[in-house]
Image 1 (cartoon, rainbow, N blue to C red):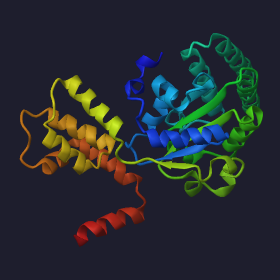
Image 2 (image 1 turned 30 degrees about the vertical axis):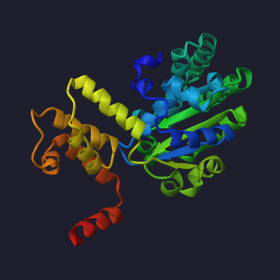
Image 3 (image 1 turned 180 degrees about the vertical axis):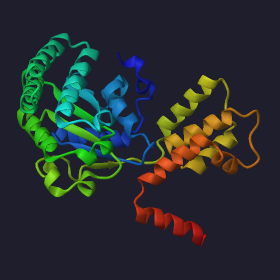
Image 4 (image 1 turned 90 degrees about the vertical axis):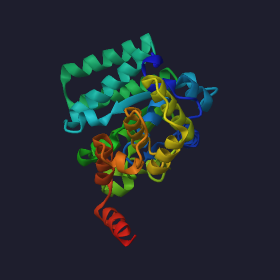
Length: 305
């Protein structure tokens, strides 16, 4: 199952310090937040937990078999009703079990999902989902962890119902349930207090800020790209690109891709890169994530120099 996912190829020490903190919260029965700019590697970290066995063995040497990660990409339901969100979570839970070839557990969850579908009611779906997590956590002794990918895209429509559901799931599973939120800014800074209140005890302050540069994963991505293209970037140019991008993964990769397409290194690397559409798109994505005051501070700083 895991080899079809790109994250399964990463070295086991990728994002080591960040994952150590995440695992610490999981062991406490708490949830956490991965904070970082777009393209810095938040989704990669979630993928490492879900699909990289070597990473799981490194961080859960004794318990990796009973820790069950469920990837939920909230960008796919950002405009959907709460009932559809419940269905989607249910489907992701079932798919995660099927991919791990946990036949008995998958059939049980699939049966609960099909029963809930016959009612097509929000309260029924919520209750059946609670029953599903309770079955996995209490009867099967699994620790169920929701990997909430791209959660910032769902924030504009999230309600207190969602966090009340998470609280109920944790109550059902005791310490065998948690959620990891991939967001650009802390939930407590972007949500009204009443929306988060039912789950705040388990997630507020549990933040892991991602660095721009993680050397093991950066080295892997560069080597993988060079092997894919069949061409190496000169060490001097590679060092300059890393300095220009700060090691930001998306900026780094699109910059190297542009360079690998050339027959020889450009005379002025920064000027060349800034003409590339892929890099411009990545920079615009970063710019739009900043608040007006942050954008103003950067603009004033640039003018001041």
